[in-house]
Amino acid sequence: MRDELSRRAMLGLGAAALLSTRGGAQPGDGVGFAVVGLGKLSQGQILPAFRTCRSARLAALVSGHPEKAHRLAAEQKLPESAVYSYERFDRIAADPRIEAVYIVLPNFLHADYTIRALKAGKHVLCEKPMATSVADAERMVAAAKAANRKLMIAYRCQYEPLNLYGMRLMRRGALGRPRLVVTNMGRQSDLADPSDAWRLDMRMSGGGALADMGIYGINGARYLLNEEPVAVRAWAQTARRDPRFRSVEDLIAWEFRFPSGAISTGTTSFDQAGTMAWEVYGTRGKMVADPGCFYGGNRLAVSAGPGDGQPKIAEVDQFAREMDWMGDIVRGRAPMVSPGEEGLQDMRLIRAILESVARGGATVPTDFGYRRAVDPAKAVRA
Ligand code: NAD
Image: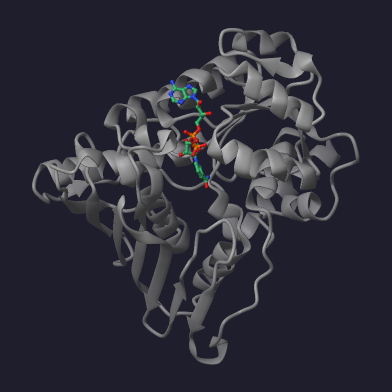
C-alpha cells in the first residue's frame, strides 16, 4: 500500500519520467504493439523506430495488402501468425502477444479501429488527428473508459526535447509574460500521391492541411502557453478551381485568445513551401523554432537576455520515444501525458476554426472546459 502510494506520488510529481528514460524497463518486458496501416509513416518511421525502443516491441502487423505485410513481417523477423488482415482484426483479442495497438491509418478510420482495439482489450496509441469529427473523438474517449484501457494520442512534439526545452523556458517565465505565439505549418500537396489524396478529401481527413499540419500549431500554442484558448476567429483563402481543394480549405489563418491575454496566430496550407515553425514573444524575450516540429534537424534561437543563443539540444527518435512512453504507461511507470481528451480538445478547436471560416471570420467561443491533467514540461524528461 505504502509502495503504491509513493509510486502514485512520484507519478504525480513526474518522477516517472526518470524511471522511463533511465532504464525502468527490464530487457524483454517491452509492451507488444500491433501496427495498423503500413503506409508512409509506418514504413518510414514507426517500424524502424522499434529497433531503439526499450519499453515497446513490435508484435504484429495489420494490413489490407498481404504481400506487403508478409514482406515487412519477414524483414522485422515476425512470424507469419503475427500478420492480420483488416477482416481478421478483431481476432487480436485472443492474441496475448499484442498488448497495445498503434493506429496509423488515414484519419477517417482512426475511430473505428481504435474502438475495436479497445473492445478487444488492447491499449491504443492513435495517430493525430485522433478522428475526423468531434463526435467520433468523444466515442473513442468513452470507449477507452468503458474498456478500462489507455488511449494515448501520438503528439510526438510533446515528448520531443526542443519543444520540451521551449515549454520549460515558458514555465520559468524566461521570456517574461507571454504575449504572442505564432505557428506556421504547411507544405505542398500532390493529388497524385495516394498518401495525399485522402488528406485532400474532407470526409477522409477531417480538414485538409488544418487537420494534418495545422493541428501541430494548435497543439503547440496550447502546450507552450500551458492554457486553453477561450475564443477563435479564422478565415481561409482557397482556390476552388485547384483540383486539390474541391472539398478542403487551403490556406487558413486563425487567431486564438487565451485567458492570460496572450494571443496565438496560426497558419496552415497545402499549397506553400514546407515548414513546421513556431515563435513565441514575451514581454522580455522571444524564441524562434524554425523548424520546430520536424522529425529531426529542429533549431531553436532564444533571445532572452542572459539566456540568449541557440541551445544545443540532443535529438531523439521521436517515434521510439512516444512508443516507449506508451509502453511505460501500460507498465505503470509513466503518467498519461497526451490522452484521448487532449486529442478531443484539438478536434473541438479544429471544428471551431472551420466554423469561424464558414461564418466569414466570426468569433467562436472555445472554452470547452478542458484542462491539461499532466504538463509535459514537468512530466517528460528532455
Ligand atoms: P498513408 O496514406 O501513407 O498510409 C495509410 C495506410 O493506410 C496505407 O498503407 C493504406 O493502404 C492504408 N489504408 C487502409 N485502408 C485504407 C483506405 N480505406 N483508404 C486509404 N488507405 C487505407 O498515410 P500516412 O502518411 O502513413 O499517415 C497515416 C496516419 O499517420 C495519419 O493519421 C496521419 O495524420 C498520421 N501521420 C502522423 C505523422 C506524425 O508526425 N505524427 C506523420 C505522418 C502521418
